[in-house]
Length: 335
Ligand SMILES: Nc1ncnc2c1ncn2[C@@H]1O[C@H](COP(=O)(O)OP(=O)(O)OP(=O)(O)O)[C@@H](O)[C@H]1O
Ligand SMILES: [Mg+2]
Image (cartoon, rainbow, N blue to C red; front, top):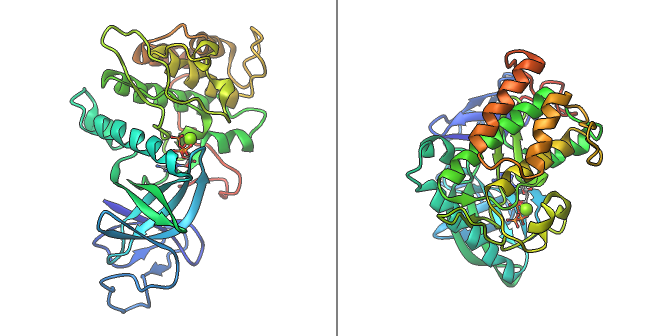
């Protein structure tokens, strides 16, 4: 397992194994130790006045605010023992939001324990719950969910859409869509619908062609016969991403997740409206496949992934390295 911090000299992400006391920055080569060079590593991080939360017997330092979700605030945290494992701390904003966190935790545990093919691989990509408990925050009781930190996944598709309102490169959208379909193929096999595939819930690894899904608070179990179930919650911020009938309380099924993933991709392609030949940055043959999915015409994630792969090869040739270059990352989007 690795830990990630940021170089105090150049600001680049630093990655090192737990047992490494010092980490050398890949970019500016500075040697970073959690104290002065030669200092012993303290058993616990000294209390420097920053906020701490005590959850399930462990104390976590709250290091920085990452994002404001619809029902929770999300922070980067660190276990205070020795060099401290990095974690995600998701804190319910109001007391009733705790139910959504418990709901999310239950589905994530179910996916982590799934015997479905691919579980070993995909469980490492999904948020991994560490602990969930009510704590007193600013005098009120709030549920806090602690999850493993995933190195490199800190750009959401929403961030990318805001950075490129006229559309991301179509090649980048192809790998993002393929990663989402592979993940959804696994979760559907494991009997779980995500139920909220929204731009803010897609986290992208810009350099490694990675994409994962967070925000499992509206997940539902797939019924055996495939009949759909209404979603427990609908996002107010991204209501337009849902198929109309599902938004109105109609049943969701596998096609719903695929339709929402496709709508995220259309949004990220800069496709405006649903005009037949307007696919934004996507070449028309790829745009047509994405449009079919966005209309709910596909329910098998793996079959759609294969179709997309085939059409993308015709349009672009064999897959090539196409990192997402977010502005402000020195043109390389390293981590
Ligand atoms: N595991 C994670 N790693 C990195 N960032 C995360 C993680 N989980 C959440 N985030 C960030 O925090 C934002 C809010 O998270 P999330 O959507 O899970 O909270 P929420 O909207 O309050 O809950 P829900 O969507 O389940 O109702 C996400 O859009 C994402 O930017
Ligand atoms: Mg959310």
